[in-house]
Amino acid sequence: MAAARVGIGGPVGSGKTALVERLIPSLLARGIDLAVITNDLVTAEDAERIRRSGLIDPARVSAVEAGACPHTVIREDPSLNIEAADDLERRFPGVELILIESGGDNLASTFSRDLTDFWMFVIDVGGGDDIPRKRGPGVVRCDLLVINKTDLAPHVGVELAPMLAQALDVRDGRPVLLTNCRKGEGIDAVVSALERDVLFRA
Image (tube, rainbow, N blue to C red; front, side):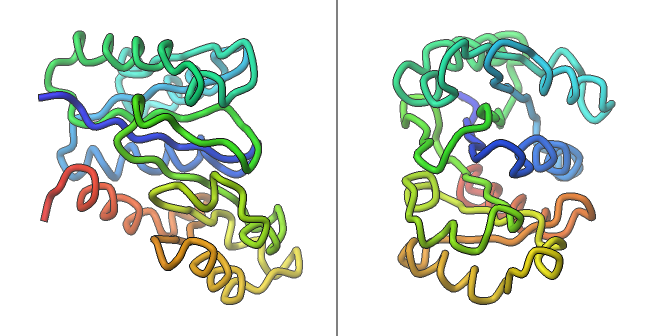
């Protein structure tokens, strides 16, 4: 049975890698066989960070170098990521879930359905409470919107309740979750969403 493939996109600095690092131990603790792909322009920096973390077998972390706009290899021509995911499945036949982290991009970044079964978009409070109102395709079309760095709200003049309400409004009520990856807050809710909506576990 093929592994489910979950994309994680969002702007530079929104906390995509931090989210992956929080998800790995939580997913493994629930018995989910896991692998990870990271995307960067011309480096494997994020992959190396996760490999060094000790959270997961380094062999289960693959790096894709986009060499162009980050959304090119997750939307226009996702063949490099598809190949990387296929390779992980060949090497680890029991893998159930592959997290595919995009390189940092803008609010127009989206994942091809040829690549992912489900994709999350990560924005952060530090970017301003007007991000949902801008209705970028990443914010509007993703399966799950994650608003990260909630701890920064009082320091940047953001009120979380209105920001969440606006996000739910532009997404017509589709899922939005709040996280603080520094402290692990909200991670269980993201994992539960993946179990329910991707792995179809009760």
